[in-house]
Image (cartoon, rainbow, N blue to C red; front, side):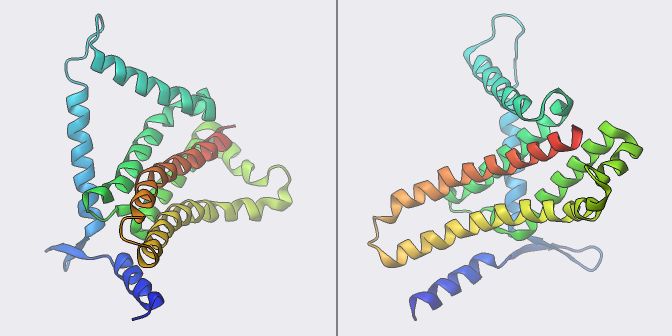
Length: 231
């Protein structure tokens, strides 16, 4: 088998969404592997959150609480600089999505398939983000101002502004999915072409650094879109 055929086979295998089990209602609802892993991530993050916020104190906080407050305060400060006071109410969503995507990309280190390699997962994240962005604009401007914003700065570009409603989620979805999948393709090529131990530092880069970068890029663009919507 040639290198190209071997890579194509592995890529097809990576893109295949395996059904873990089926819920026997409405004719059977298949539950994909990415959904089960997402449930696992949600449960782990929920338990971790419960453990971190136990026994919080107003006076004389412990080191754990101080580190936690510093981390959360730093995240709020970062997003405040991006979206301003008007968009501060959406910061918890941005932080939650950043943590989820970061953990989802890193979970490959445990031998599990990252949910972000499933196009359905990245599409769902993009759609939710765009719905929130449009809601932010509607909440800030009202119905009349929201409709009027499609004709800004001039009415002739209204069709382009309307088209952006569909372009933005597609852009967010394909950027996240494409970068995660691209990292997999590069790693497989490295494994096929170089000795066994050389891919290790590259694997650390793509599994850790690049995965965290993709989480940052996704929430960064979402924050910019929210800022644009509430201006």
